[in-house]
Length: 398
Image (cartoon, rainbow, N blue to C red; front, side, top):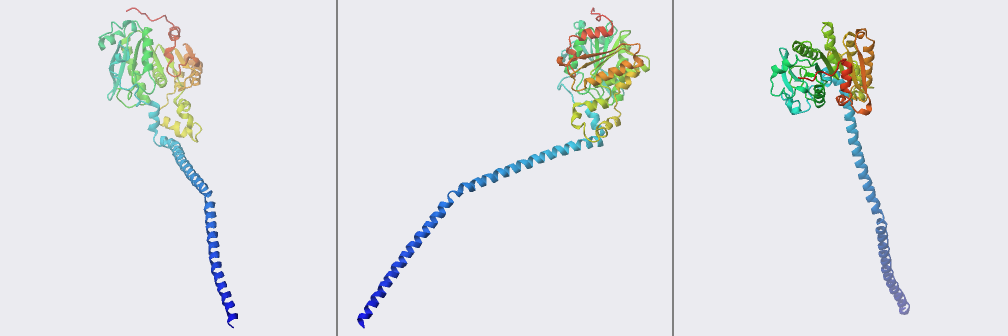
């Protein structure tokens, strides 16, 4: 019995030992397998990390793009809203359109003393103040012929007024919108005309420069009439010519039509860069380009002008003017298109009121670069004026 039992016991012990060995081996294998899987997982994560970073970077870039597009869209919507709002604002507040036409609040050049024209190189010019109405005061400059510049030094207003009775013709200059009588291109024209032997009288309309009053077309016309009568009362039989530039051409034709109706016409009318009427000019102005095809353009932009009583109807006025007419216009004029000046000339040339008077159109080629306000630079201007006025050079003796 014992012999038989012992092997069994030994066998059992061997099995137990084998089981222990087997368990340890299994554990070792499992541990190795776990480490292998963990290493594989770690190894598998390694290449995935850059992909995650790229995805995050792409998301940030897309986020920035979306933010930029949102801001751009917001800006575009604001611009579109402003674009649409401006016509309604002008329609509801017609006074805005009047201010845009007159631009009298734009005083350039800045920081000049209009009481001292000599600061602008006009050392033979006197500053006056005239009062056409109770609450209106006009600042006036009177430049005598350049040949008198030495004699004019230190002279008072009375001397300048008396000088108008000399044998030198007088030009009443009516400037355009914006700025003052001291504008750079205006001053240069005074110098040219003065050098040719003319008296030059110019002024700021009510509401411009240091002149007092509120701008309006009838008011500006009345201001010009008052200054013209003031000149005629002192100039005797000397010729008086009226020169209008840009918006000043509208004032000039209003004035001359009124003078012709009362049978006291000027000796000639000169229009520099003129338009036909303010509606056509407003439609052709560079500001109107962005709205020219806007639905209801006339109703939004042009009707408020008429509602403000602003017409400056040169095309209608020239049908009632009976004096010589000269039109000067540069082909490259960006403010008042050349074709408007040509159209005005064609209307005047066919008008019966000019049948006994000279009507002349003088274009300036675009290559000359005179644009809207530099015709004074033309070396041909003295000859043009001399031939048009039908006289020799003004007398240059004292």
